[in-house]
Image (cartoon, rainbow, N blue to C red; front, side, top):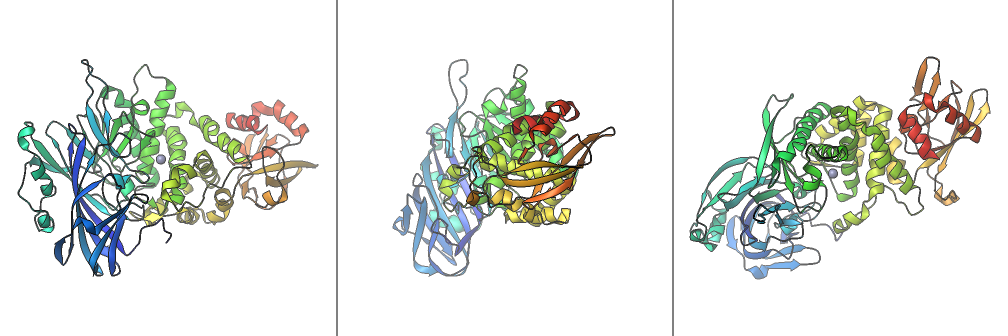
Length: 601
Ligand SMILES: [Zn+2]
């Protein structure tokens, strides 16, 4: 394990977290009891914790309870880690660590942070608070093992003023008035301990005539820390119901916002449609008891796929009858992207951040192409996908400075700088290529196999290829590895030898046209997708593949082009005569073919 990763001698199995949010004071206080599995004797417990959390109490239970002096806690601000140094080594087996801490609701859109509503008629803005943890900000809101491989269950209790709405990944199990209790911190491990009780003595209920309410949410399934989420504020909502065709159960779908909830109908409809389609495609029921979406004003990205509690920007999610078609498409595609993650990413999660591209590329393919084609066919998203992802990927990846989709990423704090449009747009394009070549049915059958095999666990790229290989009956990894592990893409040169015979060859494509021998060592698996047009119409040869440097191919008609529907992530170089013919035959080809030809120039 590199220095960037937490030790694996201790791992969390369950977090019991209680957070009391004081929106008026812009602060929160929290306690967390972390159930641990100690895999080998250790004198230290190392976990992630951001220096902005002020720890007030610390206790350990391993057979007996000991409240630890705060001097036992050593923090490393650079690594955002804390180490509990124990006088006696912690023995292999089960243990519990309890931490009580306080922090400010920060304004930097990471961790547990504050946002403001639109002003009301008196110009007053309401303060509310929500979380954003991906990739490495869960540690800004709770001490935790903040790596995707450390999956655990989470029981969350949120304590807030009575008029405020609290949201978390799961549905509320129950709520009751919350008042000061005379509980000592060392009693935190006692049977029957009520979560949040140590938080009570520090505030006076008299200053809150409204009263406080504690809401406990049902425990989550096993999940990664970056997908945990909660929120607190004066939200209103709209609701629809989803009846699962798989389980027959009905669950509520809601969109929450502080303002303009009437503009959230599109997002709600998209959620309902997406859940229905994904259950068909993945053959796994949406696993949580509800799916909320919280629309937020201050938000660092388009949206975030917290499990059961998607969060997203007002600008992306709120639309009305005056909104442009582009805004409707944005809302629909973003929500389809986020809902895809409820399965791909959340049920099955990457082992490490080097596979983040796969998570995002898959959700992009689903959200920007596969789902809209089924839900809003009138949007004709295939052309937009080609422009936004396929052509963009080819343009960026044609530069000498490009990089492979999958790159090493040992330091999780550098993820954002490592993965870029090449990773996501090329990633989505090569997944589309694979899906088109093997056929959507086999592709999704393979994805379902992959998801089922790794339910509530972690996986990596090869596991997805294995799933799809099993449905296709071919080694998909062999086909895909050059596309994901190597920089660049090929240009396929078409020479016409006469008598319907073509000589096809591949070489690395650089926009400067000067690939040196050492830059031209990769041989890609290139689906040729030769489209021919004759009096009976158009046919595509899906079986022709260029997997060597060159090959000969007999073409069935003089009206032909390669890379039908721009399925493959490559350029084609025709002879000038052929380009002239293609120009005059353009009407015989589809819009995607014509776009591919134009972009090819
Ligand atoms: Zn995503």
